[in-house]
Length: 159
Image (cartoon, rainbow, N blue to C red):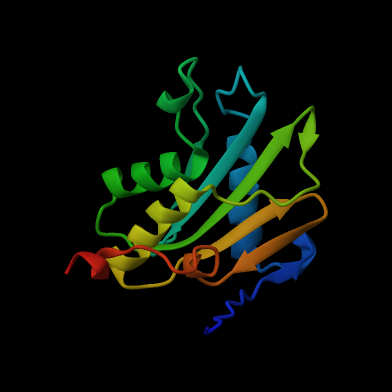
């Protein structure tokens, strides 16, 4: 038998330690949470996408009574960015969540479907996407979605 060990490097910052552009991106994600449509879970998630040209595109979760018909904040933001500025590379994505009257103390990570979409964005532009995951207690940062999606399925599998 052979064993493979996978490791993920996650940088942990206080918000004050983030760069100015990272703070701006996180604040945009936080702002987007308050516009989310989440009447069923009351778990409001916001995402902000930083494009290569410096534009920040926001998105939030959109729930539906038929749960599979909703969409996560990260995919809403990324799909809107790709629909409106398809030639702009995505450089970073920030995620934040609001629940029970406050931003969460636990870091919010992209779900599996959002991780797969972010992998497609990295592959499309052949460039890593930094992911910033905000909580009131700190910010987790990974330099590529591949750190959150090891052994991923990408376009190279289809060739």
